Image 1: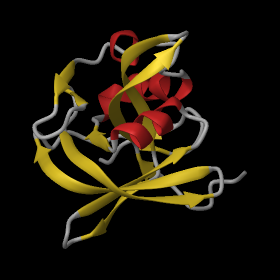
Image 2: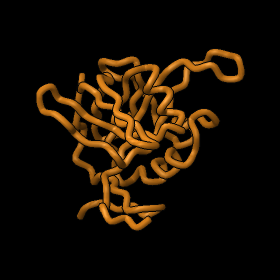
Image 3: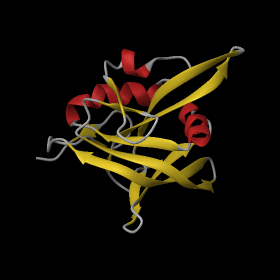
Length: 163
């Protein structure tokens, strides 16, 4: 399908929850690459992400009711590509994408040290939209660490940044 709607800023969304894997309860920290995300209210400050129902992160966020949006620099394009192409049920994406896991300020959820900024959210609503769900999160903490060039996605493996 043609990308009529254009280039979008890529973010890495992190989440954590305990799941039963092969009969054993395991804590899973995961990363999913997301292009579909946006602020959706000033008061209260709400931020939304859109996740496919077949993704491992969908189940983690649905159970944990929280997530972190990690805004990433262009230099992490390979990590973004990896995290968007591999399942967190079969890969430790932090380790394999060479990203440093740190704890969030206000949630039981990891975030990515190399990110240039974060938005930490508690889920307050879920909206089914066909094969995806929009998770609306109330922002509990936000932080901008640097003004590095951000990563934008323009389809398939085509990434870019601003001048």
